[in-house]
Structures are given as C-alpha cells and as structure tokens.
Length: 231
Image 1 (cartoon, rainbow, N blue to C red):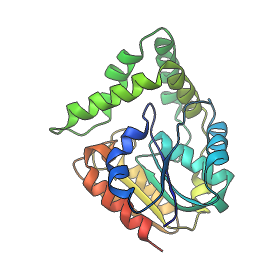
Image 2 (cartoon, helix red, strand yellow):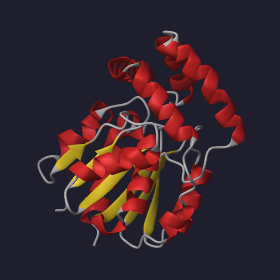
Image 3 (cartoon, rainbow, N blue to C red):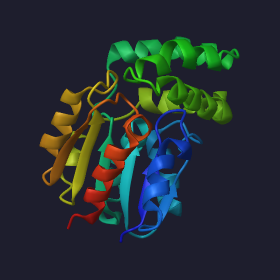
Image 4 (cartoon, rainbow, N blue to C red):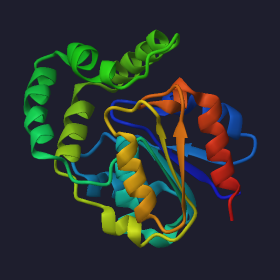
C-alpha cells in the first residue's frame, strides 16, 4: 500500500492522529510531519516534500489540509491520493485576517494558553462526553509546540493562496471528510471541495466537530481505510 503522510492541524502534532496510527500502522507505512517551522505555506510544503517519499498518499486536517493543497500544487506528480479533513481551499477572509494580529501579539506576550483556551479550541468541538479529554489533548499539543509555532502558523494561514484550481486539476482518489458540527470549516466548504475534485468521495462524520480524528475516531479511521484501499 502507498505510504501515508499525515499533516496535523494548527497547534497540533501526531497525537491528533493517534487512533488512526494505532489502527492503520500494521497495514501501511505512516509518517507525520510538523508544520510550524516557517511562516509561508510555500516554505512549509517545500520542507515536507524534501523529506517525503517519491510517491505517497497525503492526508491533512484543518491547516494540515491547507498545507496538503500547497504540496499538491508544488508537486502533483508525487501525490497518489488526497484526503482533506475539516479544511478550506479558499484564501483567508478579511475579517478573519483582522483577528490574527491581536492573537499573535497576545501569544508573543506570553498568553498562548489563554488564547487557545478562550478563543480557539472551544469553537472546534462538538458537544459530547469526551469533549473535556479532547480539549485537554489540544492544550497539551499547543503548549508543547509553543508560541513561535503559533505565530508562524498564523501568518501562513493569513497569507495563504486560494487553491481551488489546484483541486480541479487533481484526478487521483480523493476523500473530503468533516465533522457534522464543524463550525470553523463547515459542511458547505467540504461540499465545495467535493465538487472541485473530479474523483472524490464526501464523508460527513456524525458526533464530531472540527477534530473528528479524536472526536469520532472509529468512523474517521474507517473512512480513511476505504480511501486508502480505493483504486
């Protein structure tokens, strides 16, 4: 089976995919890549490509999906399959851009935990019995990555290009997946990506918000397995 490269979302690391790694690692070569060392999508994608196999399946969640689209733009011949989860192909809207600078300044002043707690993660998740544990995991990942990664990622997201044409030109097997209750990247955004990708399947994960890999890992892993096995 083609090697699988997993790209986590903003202020997340490989722990975001722990259930999938545990379930799939016996059947496929799995890799994850950090996405915080640079402040442009182009540089983030270029560094990942330097270390990736010649050909691979590519799956990204949230910001990881946005970086995945840039990888696809730079090296479409190397991406055999594409999975975009809870992501967004569009450039950032002006009102969202305007909110980045206060967050960046607060984090640079030492307020990373507050920003993550009050302004970001509570909007990510569906209600449910596991929400507290998932929020704790998110905070642990964010604090281990630190303030500079937050700043770099915020700037890269703020200045990202539109990738709709990139998706139109990809004809490999594609999965577009999101949590039913994702407020950050709603279902409508995934319907758009499904329409743009010529050979895609749309999968809506119930009882999940922006992080279905850990909110509803069983259904998410099953969808990824079907995608990996697709011809």
